[in-house]
View 1 (cartoon, rainbow, N blue to C red):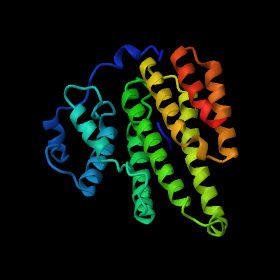
View 2 (tube, rainbow, N blue to C red):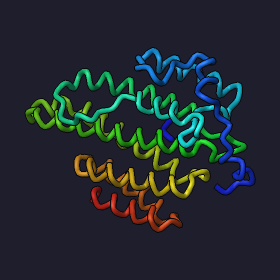
View 3 (cartoon, rainbow, N blue to C red):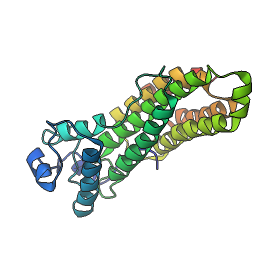
View 4 (tube, one colour):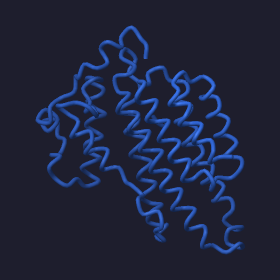
Length: 244
């Protein structure tokens, strides 16, 4: 699952039903004032998964006065790949695997809520933006390390390189398909997410193979055709430049 209106229930979507920090602490979530370990994050995700089953609207929210600090703490614990010129590709790959497990789990926690479709749209958009940005960071790291390989080594690793190309492409495709088909995206989140896509395509677009470019061009052009928001059209049109 990758991540990530106009419904009769939308008037309820902005009512904050999250808990206070103290209430989350009572559930067993570690204090946000302390440094978290991987186990602390694992514990927090497990508690939120259980809490969602009890009260689907009670999770920490991005813009909540009560719970935004906890949401931000969780987001900041997701592994990042800011050093895109690291030569330690082995350990970075292990971290990337952990990144995938965490972000897809978190995406599941903040998945679609039937009666209030856009209730968690701010949070799911933040998670999808994190997915796109950090996946692109890792892609730059990956391609950087490939640049040091000899032609012969690249040939022997061709299948692995192609699998990676497919993986990063599928990540973009999944989030773009959800963006295209979803009815719960808020106006401002559509604009922000389209900007995130454009900014990251600017960074990695020229490193993708032609098959990957063609797939992304197809879906982005589809979204541009059906979009009713000029800024979304502008952002995605800008992103297309880096695939052609």
